[in-house]
Amino acid sequence: MSAGERGIEQSFGRAACVLDALVQARGQGLRFTDLMHQTGFSKATLHRLLAGLVTYGFVDLEQPGARYFLGFRLGAWVSAAHNRHGLAERAAPIVRRLSDAVQETAYLSVRAGDMAVCLVLQEGRAAIRALPLSPGDRSALGVGSASAAILGAMTDEEEIDEILATPAHIAYCARRKVSQEHIRRHIARVRKQGYALVDDLNPDMTGLGVPIFDHEGKAVAALSVATIHTRTRDPGSREAILREAREAASMLESLFRQWMVGGSGPVG
Image (cartoon, rainbow, N blue to C red):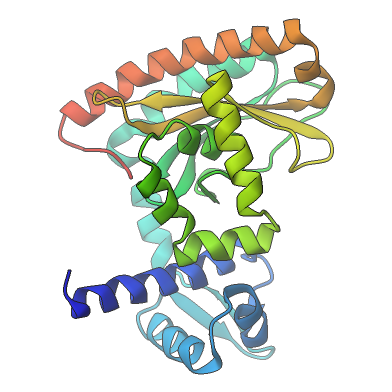
C-alpha cells in the first residue's frame, strides 16, 4: 500500500468516527467540543473533516446552537443499504419466527468491516421488552451479543487485532466505556461455548448471540436474543433459547449463502 493509499484509508476512518458519533446523538446533535471529546481528534483535524462532510451533505450544521447532525444525503444511502438486494425482507420471517418462539426481542446483525449493523429487528411479546438497537444501528465488533458472536467466531488473530485498532472501533468503545479486556473476555467465552452471552453491558438485560457463517466458514452475521437475566441464568431456559436461535441461524446461513452465490457478496 502506498503512502497516498494509507492517507485515504486514514481519512475515511476518521470521517467514519465523526459519523458514528453523530449517529449516537442523532436526536440532539453534537457541538464541536462534544465531537472533539468523543473522537479524540485535534481541533485542526476535526475542523478539516467537518468542512468536507458539510460541503458534500453528509453532515449538517444547524444554527443557532452550532450543533452538527447527520446530513440528509445519508438518508438515501441508508434506505438503499438497509434492504440490500432484498436480504432484510427475506430474513425478516425467520427472525420473527424466532422471536415468537422465545417470546423475546430478536435481531439479525450483519458484519460491515469493524462494525455490526442491525438489519432486522423483531420486538418480543414478553412483559419486559428490550430494544437497545434499531435497524441501521451500528455496534463495534465485540460490543454486544451479536457483534461478540461475530468477532469470537473469527480465527485470524491478526485480523482481530486490526479491527480493535481502527479509529472507529476505538472511538465507539470509548463512548460506551468498553475496554479491550471486556472484548477479549467475550471472545474467549464465544470460543469456549460456541455462542455469545453478554450480561455485563445492561444492568437489566442479557444478550445471547449465535454466529452465522458463509460458504467459506467465515462469520458474516449473527442472530441475537435480548432477555432478562433470570431467563439465561436458568440452564433449561438458556438452552431452550439457544436451540431456537441455532435453528434460525441455520436457516439464515442457507439464505446468506444463496444471497452470496447470487453475486451480492458479503457485507463486511
